[in-house]
Image (cartoon, rainbow, N blue to C red):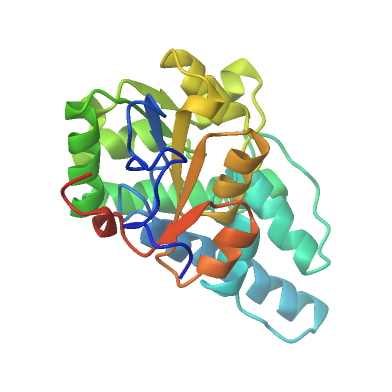
Length: 261
């Protein structure tokens, strides 16, 4: 594990969640606040495995399934959906036409595969409510009570629907998601644009904002954007990856910050 969260202090010896040092906290959604990263991972696997099975039969190649650990973390996790498709296909040396946003789910194109994954995710969300990480929600409540301004920054098109289903939308003042990024022409993670947009909307600056992320792309965005503190949440035993991509501190769960922050 990285630097101990309970011992991490600002240069003047204060708690990292000090209003003297920071005024805003930006949370990722999937894997930080909600347990939906498990649904995302399963839907990606189903989408890619169906595609890879068909391709293997057609090309008379061996079928190598999508890994919910290595492939998901390295190529998909935390990135905008179609960037995830492009990244995974590139890792396998597969070229497909781009398609477009209206490509039917499952079409042999970048957009077709991305739309298939989104269809599976929304179907799953209709059947089961998204869970939340209680320690993360508790920390958000404490920070809000202490006067911090809170935002959510997600690459997901379904961000607001997930927040509403989880009953946490009123906890956060600002939400910057795939829809916002598309409307404003913002680059997705690992570029810092969406985090910078959220900080600005909260009346803060990057150096006065804290980012909490579970994905390598997310902590990389925080580091590139010059944010005051980037906290990684290593739920997949990926603490080394988070640290190497720019996290200042890594914990396995936000409960490690305790109730006294």
